[in-house]
Structure formats: structure tokens, C-alpha cells
Length: 390
Ligand SMILES: Cc1ncc(COP(=O)(O)O)c(C=O)c1O
Image 1: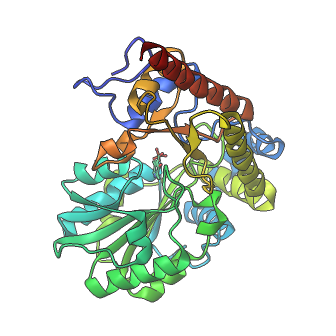
Image 2: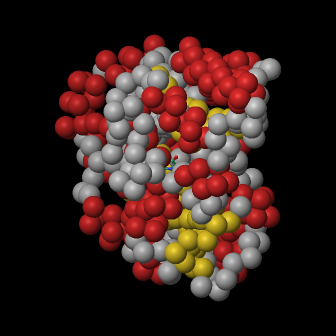
């Protein structure tokens, strides 16, 4: 439910889930809320959009499997995933990564009642897993990196988001090797959401080569939806291993026949353009915006939480004596600036995110600077008011 202030309110009076807050931000104002790209198209991306009628004609004529494999190959090879199971029957295309996530959650629930999930992470991942009846156990990024999380026997799968949203943490190549070996040894499925990996070269080692070598059962969810300002024209990819004993193909076919070949042709073009300099441009935009944020906040009592992150979102830590994240979120939303409070990312302990907000960086730099000014100003005003009162 959305209040007249533009802040999102659930029926129980709480602020609702993150997506409902992101939806409130679509109503207008300064939207630094969702992680979807909302910067202008580059000149070469605009040319691709201008060619959509031509791509439509091409899509009508070509065989779907060929168009799909081409999009998967161009996209996944362009981000280092040379061993992705293209054209094996173990890599399917979904309307979005959340659809791939829901299929994964349903399949995991056939196998186990308990899943260990990285904490914190974007809340639609725990919501979809729980929605399929799974009980979740939080694991930290550090435990996953060490590769030996201590898990009760009933936990049948480990779910990792890397790069993670909102922290930007990346599971290292050695970390994945350790974790995959652990899952193989203990008979657990290793599931990964790598939706943000095209933004961070540190996440572009060949995940599929490591997973396949490990002998573990695995599932990977990829995404084109966090990269290009294509108005939600995007796809999620769901891949799994040869020995992954989960009914993923069956559940996929319960949901859809195929995504649009027009979107797949568009993805091929965007992925080619990205490999020819578009990824470098995107990564530079995100780097500049993170730096602009840091510069505006320098000297204020608000700090960049993860200065080393490369993903297109940034967490800000609020001072202990200032407003908490929910209060600040509500105050800013009332005045038309939309960010996210980080509590819901901490899906097992909302309190861990009380002092943090998240700002989207796949935006024009001027939007990021304006939002940073608004945040710093609002926190300063609260601190000044508290000092005057005390
Ligand atoms: C890590 C991660 N995975 C998946 C999703 C879902 O993406 P979509 O809404 O495009 O399905 C999100 C959304 O922000 C996300 O942050």
C-alpha cells in the first residue's frame, strides 16, 4: 500500500518489503530507490533501440533456439562464463531473474526443507524461498568465503548472492572452490544469484568451470536486468549442472514456453556493445557516482559503508545520534526523494540494518549528487534539532 506521502506502508503499518518501497518511488520525485538502470542510453545503445523494428523482422524469421543460444553465448561469454551450459538443455531463459529464482525455490523445496542463505541480501530472495515453504538459516559473507559454514544436517542447500546486494561483496574464486567442495562433500546443493556480476570484473572468473569440476549439484541465476536502461526489457537465465537432481526444467515449463526472441536479439546487441566498451563505460559511471557520493558526504556525519564495492548500489551509514534509517526514509520520501532503508536486507534480523540506507548508482550523476545533498542536509537538520533540544 502507498501512503499519500509516497512512502510505502504495508497493511500491518510497517514500511513493507523493498519492492513495495521501490514501487512508491516510481510515482515521481527523485528516484534513488531501485537497482534498475535509469541513466540515459549511450549513443550506441540508442542506435540499437532505434533498430528494434529491424530486429522484430529478424526475430519473426529465425529459429528460436538459435536466437536464444546466440544471446546466452554473447552475454555469458562477454562476462567470462565460457563454460556456461549453452545449448545443453540446462540453461533456460526467463522473463526476469525473479522468475528463475521462484523456479529454483520450488525445485529446492522438493529436495529439502532448509536452506542456508547469505545475510544480508535483497529481500525478494528470502521471500521467494519462504514462499515455497523453505525454512532459512542466515550465513555471513565471511563464513561463505571461508567455505566451511557450520550447518545443521537438515540444511540441504546453500544460497549465495555474489556480487551481493546491497554490500557489493564478491565471493572469490578460491572461496567458490572451497564452498563448492564443501557442498559436494556434504551433499548440499549450491545455488547462486550472480545478477550483478557484469558490473564487477572480480566476479567474472568462470563460475561454471569451478562448479562443474567440484562435483557439487549447482544452480546459477544470471540477469541482464541490472545493466542497461532498457525499460525492463531484460531476461534472467537459469543454469544447472549435469548431475543436479532437481526438477528445474519441469517447473520452468510450468511457467513459460519462451521469452520474446525480440528481447533476446536486443540482448545480443547490447551484450556485443557492452563487450566493445559498454561495460567499461557502465563501470566508470558507477565508479564516478560512488565517488561523487563520497565527495558530497565528506565532512558530514554520513559515511559510505562499502567504499570498495563496484555494484550499482551504495550503502550509507548514519550517525548513532541521528535519525534511524526508517525515519530518514519516510522523511525523505515525504519530500519526494526515494532511497531504501537497509533493515529489510537483513532478512533475519532487520535491526542489523537500522543505521544504513541504500542509494542506487545507475543514475545520472546529477541525481546522485542531489540525493546525497538531501540525505546529508536531513541528517544535519535532525542532529542540530536534537542538540538544540538537549
Ligand atoms: C541480487 C538480486 N537478484 C535478483 C533480483 C530480482 O530482479 P528482477 O526484479 O529483475 O527479477 C534483484 C532485484 O533487485 C536483486 O537485487
